[in-house]
Image 1 (spheres, rainbow, N blue to C red):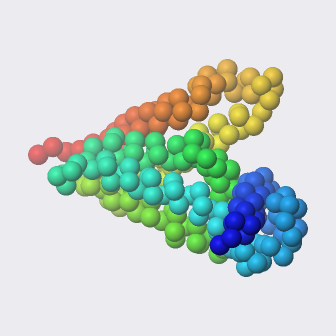
Image 2: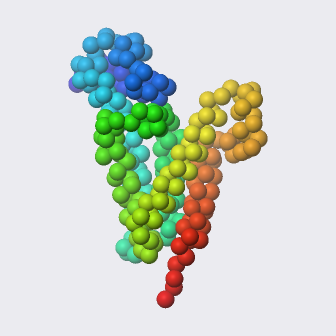
Image 3: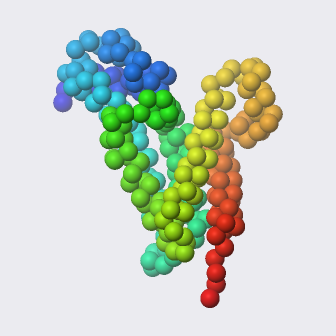
Length: 231
C-alpha cells in the first residue's frame, strides 16, 4: 500500500476513533468522518467499504492489543507446572491489564468510551464482531482461570463474579475519564478528588491502586461467599 493510501486510512481511523467516542456510531456521518480526517467523502467507502467496517477496524486497532495482552497476563497467572493458580493472582492479572489498556495504552481511553457508549445506548448486531473477536476470548480465559483457581465454584457463580469484577473495572475507568475531562478549577472535579484523592494521582499510580483494591475486595468477597472446605 502506498504511503498516501496508508496516511488516508490512518487519518480516517484516528478521526473515527475520536468521533465515535464523543458522539456514538449513529450520530456520526460519513461526511463528519471525512471532514475531520480532511479527506474526500468517497475515501470511507474506498478504504473501509462503509462506516460499519470502519467502526470495526477502529475497535480492532486498539482493543486487539488489549485482548492479547490480557490473555497473556492470565496465562502468566497460572503456575508453570500446570498447578492450581491463586485466585488473587488471576483477578489481579485480568484487572491490571484491562485498566492499563483502557487508561495507559495509546488510544485505549477513547476506544473504551466508544464501546461503553454503544453497549449502553444502542446495541445491535453490528457489535457481535466486537464480542466474538475481542470480549468473548477474554471472558472465556478469565472464566477458565477462575475455575482452575476455585474448582469448587459452579460456572453460574463464576459468571456472577466475573460480571461484578468487570463492572468495578468499568466504574473506575469511567470515573477517571470523567475527572480528567474536567478543567482543573472545575467544582465537580474538586469534589471528585476530595472524595476520592487517588483520582489526582498519575494515571499509572491510579491504575495500580485500583487494581490492588479490586483484587483484594473481590477475592475477599468470593472467599466469604464460598468458603473453601479443606479436606
